[in-house]
Length: 95
Image (cartoon, rainbow, N blue to C red; front, side, top):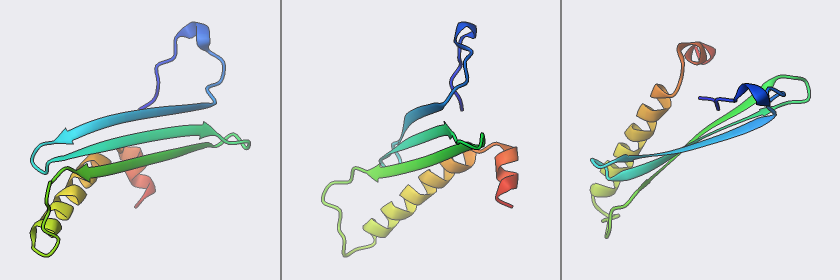
């Protein structure tokens, strides 16, 4: 993802921040996906791709299995968003 910049604003883009929120009612949870980019002094771009998930269960039983099931669902939700947000080129960098 990157911002669409109109032609009159063609100077070099120095940094950007994109923040999106997604809901998953099956958990129930919200995920906030933040992507930040910044040009480094050597000209190489730096990219931060951060995903925060949070659940909204009330009175969650920390002694039972429900806590672990909720944590598993949060991890699955985060993993789905992470995988979907990567291009094939980006995936190659991690292989």
